[in-house]
Image (cartoon, rainbow over all chains, first blue to last red; front, top):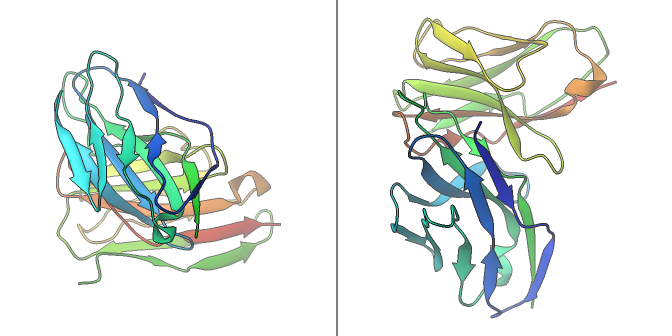
Length: 116
Length: 112
């Protein structure tokens, strides 16, 4: 079956530090990959996506590259801000000889806290 | 544009009670899903629907029922609440397969 593994958290950084959150996946077919962000008390928001190998998704200074050879989709940001404090989820949507029916498989989430 | 609207935001139930979590979307999306979020486990799919009149089970369907009589609405029913169903529930919709999903703000449910 499909699965997503994220690095263990929580992650605590100082403002302007470099961020990496690791994500690896197992999937049948050719998955689309996503990073979602959840701010306190809110639902999940799409942060970025990539739909095929070597695609780079980017948004709000965050980037992630779809690496088929290492089955990875690591999230990076060069300089984090206090406002980036949130929970980050890696997810995939995979076809299996048909359609994914819009189903997502999520990692367990990584809590990021950024201090001034 | 309201997007995905969930009600109620908070609910406390006693074991054995039943209730319905409401979900409505105004984006004319065909695909809708229900997830539960538990600490350290990410989100897990409960039920999903690919259109009005069509539903199917996800990863953790036991204890929950769904129906989809219209494109807009996708209610989740707990028939006999159990403490193990204490969780945060999210409804989501998407315009098609492999497309990003739009999430509601969630319903925080406690079963005593």
